Amino acid sequence: MRLLSVVLSGGAGSRLWPASRQAFPKPFMKIGGSTLLQQAIERGQACGTGDLMVVTNKDHVFLTKDVLAQMSDPPETTLLLEPKGRNTGPAIALAALQCIKQFSGDTLMLVLSADHLVPDVEAFVASASQAFRLAAQGNLVVFGISPTSPDSGFGYIEVEHFSRESHPVKRFVEKPDLKTAQEYLATGRYYWNSGMFCFTADAIVSAFERHAPEVLAAARGALDSSKPAGNTVEFELHAFGLQPDISIDYAVMERADNVHVVPAKFAWSDVGSWPAVSNAHTPDASGNTLPADAVAIDTTGTHVQVESHGPKVVATLGVQNLVIVDTPDALLVAHKDSAQKVKQVVDALRSRKHETVYLPAVVHRPWGTYASLKEEDGYKVKRITVKPGESLSLQYHYQRAEHWVVVQGSAIVQIGDVEHPTRPGEYRYIPLKEKHRLTNVGKDELVLIEVQCGTYLGEDDIVRLADTYGRA
Image 1: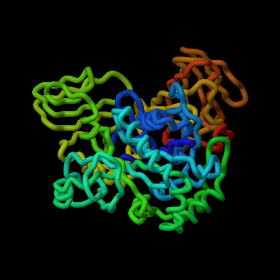
Image 2 (image 1 turned 135 degrees about the horizontal axis):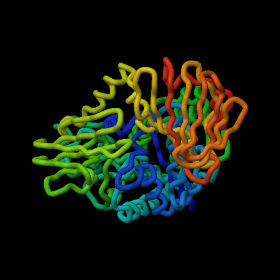
Image 3 (image 1 turned 45 degrees about the vertical axis):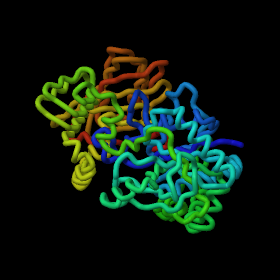
């Protein structure tokens, strides 16, 4: 029987601002040396899944491809590209329909979230094997996490009695208040809903037909009007938007009578807050989780994370139980007890249309990255990287001229209709309103320092004349 990993790579991860941004969300954060998305993919591979399907926003397609390109043994992958978020119900319905179309209805789908942390992969494989056996019999399977605290941030799964083996689900319960969560914990008959599932494509489609036919019908419409191209399926905005915004729990799991829970035999975290990130690291003798070059004096229980364009030392003195996240364009200082309120900061910044909500300090593009190093009235300094064989669009600007210096790699700089080979240490000037393009013709990454000069330096002052990635 074919095994397919379906990784749901959505969500903004706003409680992990400023490391997580709308254009660079939580699945692409690195914890333990690799991104959460890569770890999810590798968990599926460890279970024997030979194929991969990733459901993600179309704006994150190149980030996703970068993760796959960095893996030593990436699986055969299909990308389902959403024009906007539509919750887990439609995402799973689309994945199941595409699975039937591409493979077969008896394919086992292991549905994973791209932003969970599961350190013990071997224990996960043991639980997944149990889920495979149940799903092959036509059941819908959910992984249940034994609660370690009366957490009101999770949905709960009730069973008749506690057991370390799988058993039928009595009911799903939405996120309770703290008092109710304490009562659940005391009974020993509740699990946290992990949001990880297993079933055959036919079984979940049948469940949609019975319990949420409107979701399935809308998903079929979105898939019928989609634009397949190679290993990607891009959905048309209008048809996709007709799908209800509903979770798989509401749409199917809470209504179906063939749902079984597999108790997790592995440690699990949804990495939903900065304290959870801190808990994923090994603390020092004072309970701090710090970068190697941080200086912590009279400091306990504090998490420090530094993301900088260059070397930077963060020092703490006489503080306890703080989260300090320092990025080139934003700084968060919060008490761990208030870390769940970071989303309020994001909401406040969003109301001001502040750029740090949307764009990370290093902005990823299909051709590479750019980062703003310095900006004052009349000028901006940026660091640009270009992947081997890639090029920026042919473009010009109305309100700025640009000065380019190559510091690494080999470039072709087109200015007007003339192409100039440019090597490290060499300089090119791009006059106002002159068409230009940058191409990496070497085998290594191209690094360029750009100085913009003008009255307006916004990213929207760009006219694309031609573009490899269809943006012109």
